[in-house]
Length: 320
Image (cartoon, rainbow, N blue to C red; front, side):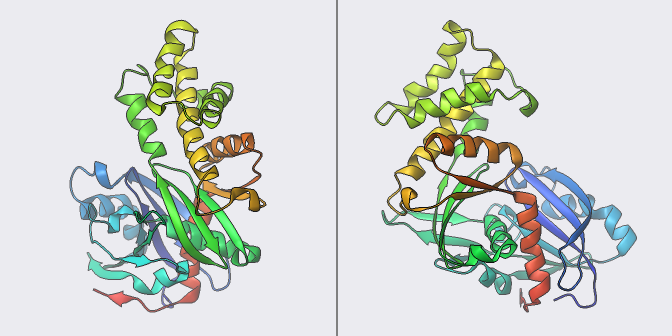
């Protein structure tokens, strides 16, 4: 696609974070990431999107001049910079490549790619932006991914459970697992202090996950309050409370996937989890409590593999 360039900038700009990568692309080879910068997500931008992006990539522009910029995520949503369409499922993620929106910004050719949408059996609608590139990369990472039926879990602020058949996204379901954790751990009576991920207590996490997975009829709101009561009466530390809350929420998410009518978990040999290492481990532990096998994939690797598919295929883009 960019025959005159070897360098380009890949940007995954979601609700919470902006992650930009200076990439070196070569024909029929994986991408080489030369540098990475992080900045605030779409909901946290204090100035405007153009300023935030240009400030983030300024050192690269100074060294390399005007580079193509490929962007995915909420930056293409109704709360983002340029709203792009949602493509209907079932669909191959490669179809996203030819439906990008292009525009020029300070000499850089920017392309924002669309998201996906589906309608579930209960007639509710669902949507994703950004995760379609994680799936695009995951499908490209191993040939067996393109054959048969797969269930893929994409943990994050808005966790996705995606049903893929023969390389096509059939449907998906979103859970606000990560956003609920952020809200409840920071803005509720349940926990009064923050802790770092390095202090994560997996024993307490398993307690919370097991509570949700074994509580088919218990009230979810009542279960949440046990985060508070365990600190009051069972000696739970703040570190344990954070992990226990995470376990309750991820356990509920996994329980819903276990009983989903859109797929039969028992008929799948394993579930692929594509996320950051910590969340991958959490979801894997919760799924293992259900005797479900998992394969773990790093979300950055999958995302960059998705951007590499764009470069290697060289499909013309739709201009704005």
